[in-house]
Length: 170
Image (tube, rainbow, N blue to C red):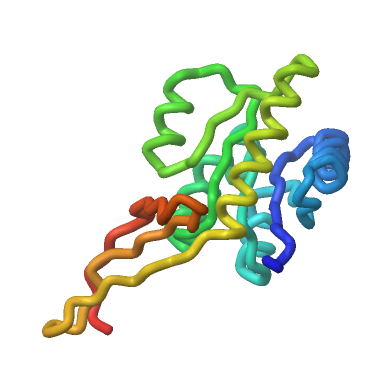
């Protein structure tokens, strides 16, 4: 049985953190462990000390904004799934977030239907990441890492996704 999925939720609104911690942790079928951080610095500290499947981040944060956190998280934790959950309705922020490699960008839900769609999407992302398999492709002569593929096995076969490409001496 796969390990329990883990989610880190970052927002500066404590009421929002409490509500979404309960919703994600108790109402998703995978029953993920949900940790919260009320600042970017705290989120990065938690990410450094524990392994997570998913980071859900607000963009509008004091001191270190969400885009800064996402930039650092993508660099330090390349296999971490990143989701933006924000009230910022500016397309430039959405474009910048996707350029950083976020998996999804959500406006904070305002209706029950939007909450339901968000929850379904987080369940799918959490399960996809929790069941992921990684393949490292090495060059046999130069002994370098050519690429990293991740995917999950399905009953119908392998579903690969290129998560990153790196050339480094092993």
